[in-house]
Length: 387
Ligand code: ATP
Ligand code: MG
Image (cartoon, rainbow, N blue to C red; front, side):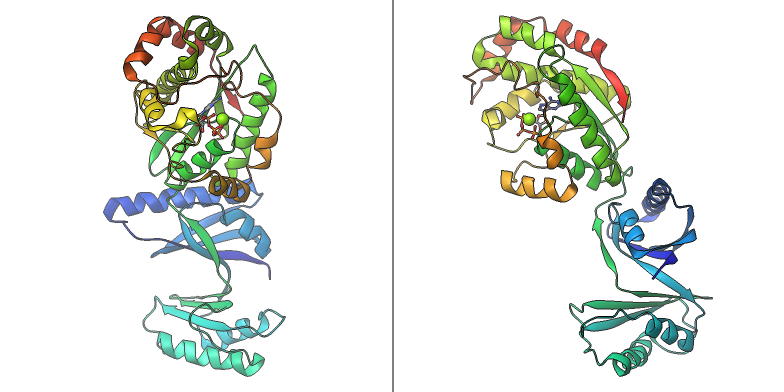
């Protein structure tokens, strides 16, 4: 069933006043951007609590799904038929387009925007339900039906769909403002980026690598691939690349072994804060999860965060590695994390690291290096790269 129209329902909870108009505008933009990205040309018509999307050429259901399933802010959507608002036309389009296959349970969900329509919603449901049953013999099931047939009566038209597709929920990307994401090459940080997008943030990734040491090229291309993969969820098509190999080496030479990693991370936080300010971003997202490794104990998180000038947000804080891995597989970044490349934290990784660093000792260790200069050098080397 190809059709140039779809209905998009969004979650209305928490939407009030001007907030709501803003939410709708951003969601409509994101939908159109996604449609255009896939070669469509369209327009969005706003109704109450939902949109109709109209294209200038029909799309198969799989194309609609590809376009709309990764857009945050959608509760559910469906490719639709638009027919005249009379029962004969509605029944005909449903019966013509019933899916083939084994007997299945179904339900009809009807609603009326136009209250002058001669039948009430329950009457519409009864009448159409009887017609589908007469044709197929399928049982009705109100909860958990396999096929949800929707009918929405508008003033001059009726919307009809056979089967609705769940959206991702969340908030439209852009309604919460900008953040930066510390994007390594690992499994965790792309998932953290996904969660930042899910709550409506525009996400600007920052990737540190160990250039001129190690396989920094692999590290950089892996980060770019991750940004590209997250583009379907609304990630911006660029990232900051910051080589910090020289600065890391200086820290290695001058700071106590056990505090090296802490100092690398404090350097990263400072650089990220400066880049965030430059971009107007209001928080720093990371893929840290409590206790996962030595540098993610409460003490380590505390002394690292101390160097950041913005809130550090960690959406994965309570997830297990297995849960994070499953999410990475689902959003399509897991296989990318297997690409070759040296993470700058593997480079110069000391064998002994402190698991319960203390603030005082951290500051003492930091006195041995010229941190301000290292931050400035790293910032001077930062480049904005399009993917
Ligand atoms: P990930 O799978 O995201 O690499 P991880 O379990 O390997 O995480 P760490 O290497 O300790 O954990 O890093 C913790 C977090 O610090 C990462 O999730 C990421 O947000 C940030 N980070 C680490 N290395 C880098 C890097 N090279 N560039 C940017 N951010 C980094
Ligand atoms: Mg890592």
